[in-house]
Length: 207
Image 1 (tube, rainbow, N blue to C red):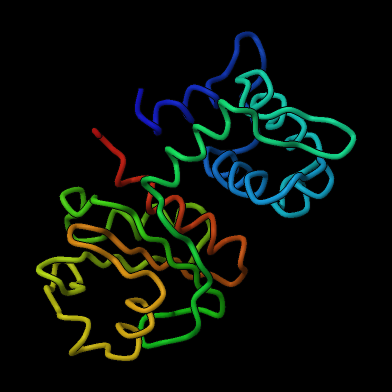
Image 2 (image 1 turned 60 degrees about the vertical axis):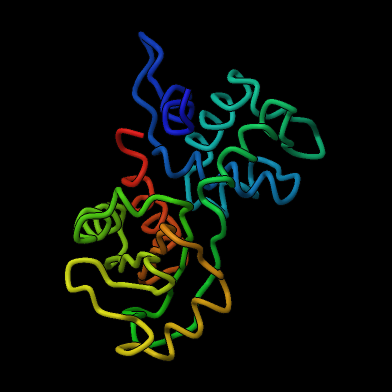
């Protein structure tokens, strides 16, 4: 089962219960946060910018899927959860906050490297639209091709057109051939985080 299917299975509504008030991207972000440190429900709710009730339901889904365990000290990944986290990180290799450069179009910018998904990128519009749907202002998609970072659709060489951004991204992420880099930008860090995750999620379609 692909990583996309595993997360969507966790999100699947259990009849006759109501649809969850959180998205797949809240699940992804929760996994990231819990993998970094043991977190309690209130702290996780704050970091996710999600209501306490929705956070409780999200955690229950993760517990039912045997992805996490919960105790007074907080939530931790199970062995199954650690395995899922490794699978997740094998695709979504690295995500970091990005300083302003020629390609950052808002106050808060997050960049994510997605391994070996260049074949899934057309013109970058699908990634941009997915980011906007999640509350971000947009997203810029780059692909690593022939040892260069290229803006798909216009085939612009980043090193020539956006030298500062190129140096910054190459030094931070060190992309390899066929990797995809997405920059999500928004008015808040949370919206930039969710926007870049939504944009990257489109690259898992039909994998």
